[in-house]
Every structure is written in structure tokens, then in C-alpha cells.
Amino acid sequence: MNLNNQMILKENDVITGWLSDRDVTEAVFDDVSPINIYNDWCLKYDIDDTISALEQDTGDNFVERCLANWNMPEDYHDLDVVNYLLELTTTPEQRVRVLTEIDLYQERGMIIVLKFLKYLVDICEENNIVLGVGRGSSVASYCLYLLGVHRIDSIKYDLDIKEFLK
Image 1 (tube, helix red, strand yellow):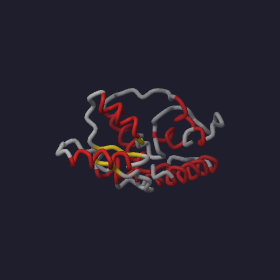
Image 2 (cartoon, rainbow, N blue to C red; image 1 turned 90 degrees about the horizontal axis):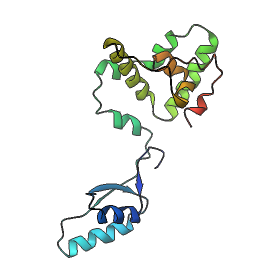
Image 3 (tube, one colour; image 1 turned 180 degrees about the horizontal axis):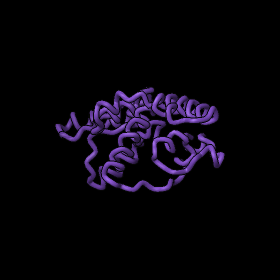
Image 4 (cartoon, rainbow, N blue to C red; image 1 turned 30 degrees about the vertical axis):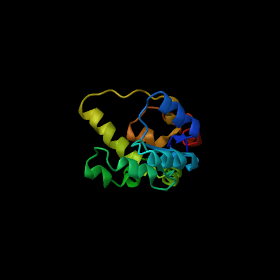
């Protein structure tokens, strides 16, 4: 996997998939030269079984591009999630924590994820779907606590956001 959670295939992965009769038509590769050799061989022998080698997506907006097609209403896309979260704070310590986390989310192109989670929590509340107390490293995020994703106050328990956004 690369930093954007794209599965990076090696030559052996494709061979294993091909021998297992898996249909591989597009993939992201560490080294495309074996794929080019394979595709040239397919063309030479008029076999319609080529593989499209996609480039690794290392752009800053990878997560946002992935979420662009998610079924999220426009008003959530337009939500100023930073101000929304800041309005939920009541102390300077909370405000600093939110701003610190926001910087980390922005560095990773994940502000849109916060918007989607706001939408998801709202849908759950509207439909009386109970969300859990919290699980794993996500409880280290005070922003997720404010959004209602979990119920663990990471400031109260002195949880480091870096445990979540490694």
C-alpha cells in the first residue's frame, strides 16, 4: 500500500492472480515494465487480455477525489467544518486541540472525511442508529469526539492525536 492506501502490485501478484483466474484489468504497479512486456506479448499474439497500469496517486487531494462520488448532500460538501467544530468548543484548550487536529487533517487532505463523518452521524441520529462508545485509535481525535463519531473525550484522557493520524 502507498500513503493513499492504493494497493501496489508486484509482478508476482499479477501472475498469481492470472493463474488463479482472477480478472485483473487495471492495477497500480511498483514497476510497470513487466506489465508492458505482458501487454506487448498480448498485442503480438492478438490476445485481448491487456492490463492498464495506473499511476500511483500521490496527490494532495487523493482522499477528496475518492469522496467526490460518495452520496453526500451538497450542503455537507459546502460545510465549513473548521468553524463548525470551533463553535462546539468552550475552552481555549479545546480550541487549540481542534486547530492542531485540523492542521493534521488538512496535511493529509482529509477535511472532506470530517464533512462526511458529520453527515454520517447526522443520518445515524435521524434514524435512531446507535453509534459506539469508541474503538481503536480514532478515540484520540477530539474532532471526531465533537462530531459525535465516538464518546471518548481525548483531552480529558490525554490521548495524543498522533496515535490516530500516524
